[in-house]
Image (cartoon, rainbow, N blue to C red; front, side, top):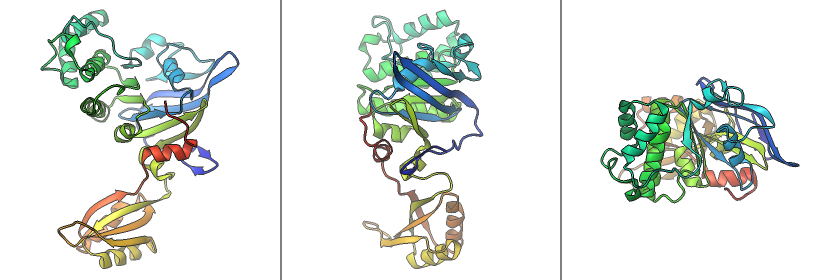
Length: 333
């Protein structure tokens, strides 16, 4: 666990059972006398989307360039799928795809022609080209010239490029810059599908906190080159470590029965009860403080005694508020 003076906001990775796709240990990099990345360690697992957050000048971009093999560390190691980026570069990079800067394509060529050129260099089959076109949803526009594409479509073509070699790890640096809401939504859907359905590990650096909250499974925070926290995103927003008490809101059909059952099972954990406003049925909001592991048992107990459970919702703060609390409000960049 990672701890600061205000309490726990970093936890052990709850996805430890998954395969480690990216593993960073004690990574350090200086420029002259300035230490830019200072002994940071974190992992990205298969099927996991990890948000990489930090203020301007925190060392995020330097870290990303070291992961991509564009810079080498002074000390520490980076491995991708078990291959060290410095000593086994080709094998490590064979598993990496992504967009570190704006994706470049030939504007006078069609999207397909761009992919075919890249596929020829990489020895990728025509079948794989068709697969990545389908994955990013460009089937209807792939034969048009890229210069006619919107920025969001160019981003999707960039993701298709990254996927040609079937990487197991994807990395993006500020991927939604300049995208309109529809483009951001399309990017989010594509990345979630790749991670959660294809098992690809994903690292995303971005300053768009609302989007990171919707996209990521966990967050890694650095400031002034130092690791500040690693946490499941929901626990981070709640300021909780694994096993800590968290606040939840239950929406139920009977306040009295719910309070009685909850008290019988868990003691004095009910903090507030209110009639749910603007509801066609008589429903009640019951605020409780319990451990996450208590929730399935509690819902089962309520349902078994004919209390309808309409909703269970963690009462966390926004990712932006949690980030400011953790870092003291440094500008994200």
